Image 1 (tube, rainbow, N blue to C red):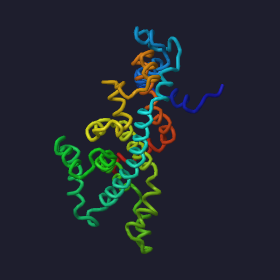
Image 2 (cartoon, one colour; image 1 turned 60 degrees about the vertical axis):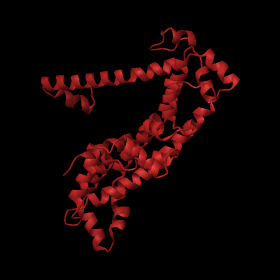
Image 3 (cartoon, helix red, strand yellow; image 1 turned 90 degrees about the vertical axis):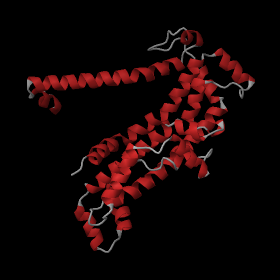
Image 4 (tube, rainbow, N blue to C red; image 1 turned 45 degrees about the vertical axis):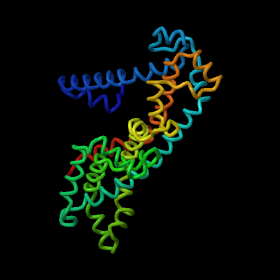
Length: 302
């Protein structure tokens, strides 16, 4: 009887190694299961009727199946407006963040003989990771710069993430030096080398950082709460925060208010939370391979 190659490699391991591998798989499976339960519970609540949700009887399977919470969301203009703000923020935020990350990581990846102030700037970046200027100065600078209550405060203020810069910097430093030297020998400058050589070779790292940037902008609610005074400017996560804490029924139409009173607030919240997580579930599978490779190579310094 033939077995897969992986089975034979496991069969040839020592007893202690087999136990180690089995325990690893068990703990990882347990972690995946425990992490999945809250999301599955939210999914079940979003499809359950008011009586079962209010009684706390919904756990691992929907009870009293209904799609009314999703009907409420689809007829709620506030949700669409917040969703559009988040889409705008994510698209612009990724472009701006990636541009600043590339422009910062490339010079920091140079040898000290090519960039004498490299060590100083690396420590300058690291210092900003460890120490913050404070919430009030942060708010005052944003307001002074004219970015209060507009999209600029959500995409420009967090445009440089030091962690992303360090990952891309290490990735570029691990690229073969011979390719770069051949480009310079042909008369190309640094910009040409960056665009023609480094960026194509950095696709795994760039895909990783795009995913990081998207998750950051999509999940961040606090800066929208801090820099937006009008609810129509809230991104989706800030809107969900206000819904989860103090739901506002003042702007609802008569039909929306009647549907809201007939539904459990927990069902509506669960449906909105589940819908807001769908983009990450859709995007992550396409970037999974590049994400893993980019994280490993970007975190190892040769």
